[in-house]
Length: 188
Image (tube, rainbow, N blue to C red; front, side, top):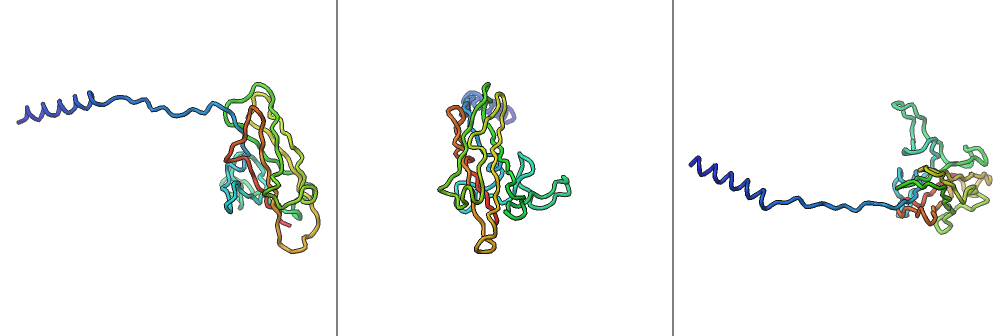
């Protein structure tokens, strides 16, 4: 009986080796380059919009927004985007990330106001300072700037306006479909 068990076990192992194979699992490899708005990658989309809406100004890049003081890291909360507590004409910086290989030449990335989503008025509530951002050669980052304006108290207290920005990209760096928009809620 022991010999039969050994024979069956050996046969089962042999059959497993004979009838199995290494199937090459080919995953698609991304070889292009795209650009994305850094803060959009750290923030969830809201309200059925194809973009996240943020109401705080990040004090550094490459992380989620901080809504409370963090004693573990010593980082203070990020300030709220507000026409009153942000100094008039204060500059907000939005980092643009390159995903994929860097370019050996500088790349100019186009940025615009997504007026179809925005309720804020350029020239009244904000100004987009950089409609073109240069990503230096052999770099993965660029920065677009916009300025918060203080148009004075709103007609209805406690209201907010929404400024939405969109990456347009260029011929080399197309915008990421998931992270090309970012909305900023400006408390009035």
